[in-house]
Length: 358
Image 1: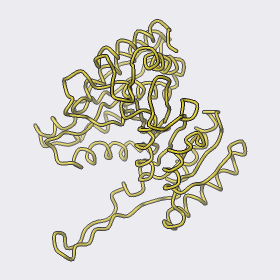
Image 2: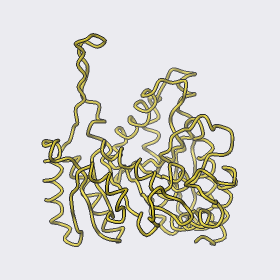
Image 3: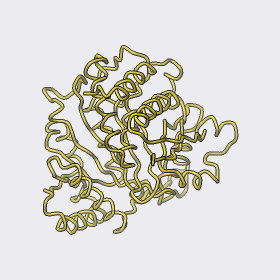
């Protein structure tokens, strides 16, 4: 019996719909090739919807999304909407309400892509960041006092629960084991200054590590992680960290792998519905020009299929992306595709259909 997956599609703002179209094109090619069915339902939320209706996230949409097998997101962010409204009202709201407590960010340099790191190759840059996605500074705890006066006080609190920290760390250990490469898990924190929060993280990490004797573990402060990601990225296999530090180091990771145009991400609820998106944003100034790189969206679609258990289809998409980067696109790391957005999607979809990926 053919497997069916019900996928919610959130095209979003700016160039989001353009890259989503190419992701869907590749997903349909993979479904046809590997004999499963994808049913897409589009939800048009984002900046345009907000400007027309004043509504950020419709009340019914969370329940509708939670009934799907996965969510495929383009990008959220509109130049005519004040920063923070859409990001908090849609992205963070969905992550929290759907309990997507893992942000998964592969950092992988492909052949044919340039990196700003001298003498580093695809053998050196291939690791994954597991970021806690529902607590920390992004939980929204805090407030202001005497706002707008010389005596103004602003407090932003980092919330870290044993449950939230432990489930993130356990996911990282399991992911490291499944990934089965160097089998090394690094905890990224700041134990010398953030002594309360990262005492909890470090104690939990060390306790859980006893259950995974096959996984090598180590620890590094976040500032050291930033230095070593530039100097010695080959040291890393899987990194686990909190919400804020994960947000920062994954953007650094995107740059060393060749830029936002190929950086994919997933917001994961292992027991529920997960959401997959390119991390580069809506890039509104490029809207409608057909020049935006869709490979991050396509790789996010690959990550979605991998999470759904369609490993062969996911591997075929990655192979097709590799071939496209190696043989067709001249230097995506320098912002030069040589093809339109839709032409890149056609290339990848064609390689998936023909089984001619790298």
